Length: 309
Length: 190
Image 1: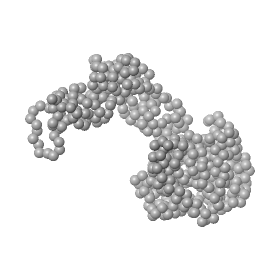
Image 2: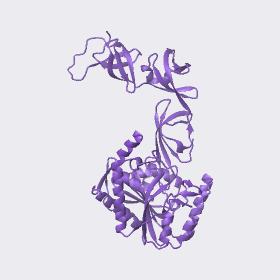
Image 3: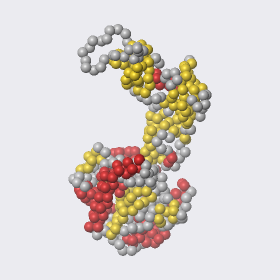
Image 4: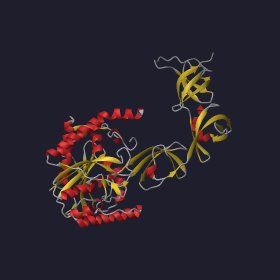
């Protein structure tokens, strides 16, 4: 065994032990509320088309980029509260906060919208932090963070107007959005508190429904703590025609931009008609473990990354 | 090359000027476009710069090579080095060396960074040993202090620096080339 490999694995042990505790407490949190833990395939025939998410091919199929489509097919069949801890794969994503293979905690609850699911995240993090013995205050990279509830909510429009000087709802510009988000808006968040960043421009709705009274805004939110993008939340879109036209548009953009042809996820689209009113979240468990281990690289919370596997 | 292939210590060209990538940070909103924030160091003048790139953008790779060169002698405004493998000689302009010429002694081996057939930088050993040519003359100052007394001295290369009071002309001292500061005396004149 190589010395560097052994030393790394020995050094990571306390973080991996804490990671296992976080898994145990997270499962208990959902099971106590009547959620069913499920497993969906990691190797899949189709994925949800996303302009900026590149899948790995596996023969003519793909490695899953997200468990969303299969979990929604289960909801459409009558399951009411589901959660899953699953490995997801996204090509080219590597950095301090990214590894091409990562772990997603994904859950859905029926008869709920993104507001209730945001509260799930708040209660989950408070419960985990309490069980790990930190009280209501954690320290991340030298910054004390008060996680007491409720967390501050800020709309995408207000945060952009204040930090970047333009309104992404009135003038949608997805490319400029991503750059300004990373370089201007995220650094403007109050560092001593988590931030719920909500109400995305409709053009970035993806699988979220639009606000009933404001069609330019999607019921989508992201939660940030300590500069980490932790979770993405939707009120789920239930309109099959609308979902298909969004997918078609994304497929066309991918074809124009990258010359790649992506197939529609037909079985998912067929199931949407039966999807109940529901909300869901996708939370990057690696990032949550980074936060609760007070480390600034994903390499410190997984035993083997793409560089050490 | 694609911005996706950039990592720390790759050398790139921007407007014909070579830069070293000192840091490359990959940032990506979950469903958004990847953004690469680079901290760059200008390899010609040492200045630093921050740049932001997006996935899909291309950058020009600077094709650089390194070799070991032995410093031979100074000829006007040029310093003459010899490639220790091929024995070819190479002239480097005094301006390119900047402060580094303060530490260059004949027969010293340094690493020379080349782009195409142009030298763009040299890397000195971290520590060099220099002979003291002249020390500040006159009576040692009589100041009441507990800090070690220093005085100024000129090295064999012409470099002027502060040395402890006990250093004499003809001594050999070790100097840190990163800071230009005195480290220790390694030889004393008999």
